[in-house]
Image (cartoon, rainbow, N blue to C red; front, side):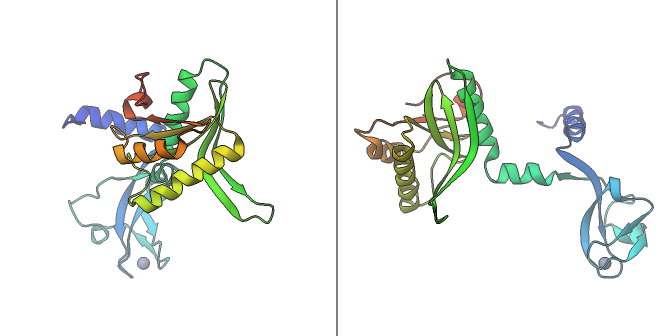
Length: 215
Ligand SMILES: [Zn+2]
């Protein structure tokens, strides 16, 4: 918040009301020395150690600094997992399509395709009817599909294969980075050359509101 304490406090209140984070203490067990975060919701004057299960009256020996125990904030586990697996990029990508679609919009997040014997064919981050066209896509925080070219090629081949199988006419690559790496864009364009499926690249500016696309 740029060092603005009031703004930070207001943001914390807002996130707590939305149950995105919650307040608690970090306490160390006097018996087994296990340090852990405990929600205020679970505390009285006592706490039960998360490891050894011993019940203890909260006292000075259970925290480090300062004289009174400090509040620690914990990010909600579901929100944490959502952000960890780039769920925010998927949500922004779907919002981008919903805003820019001139026709009724519909979507499904993450789909796995399996053969009849249940072997995995591939997984996509989202599938949508965007502007009247079946669209599948990938969402990444970093503007690259993978850290190695070999892994990126596998992902591109998977999308080319699935687009063909589903007759999807568009593959949308979304990133919350400034832009997609040029080698990624070139590799994707090469893979889709001459095919009825059009790859589209969307970066953070598009996702957060400006209506232009990189390609
Ligand atoms: Zn313990």
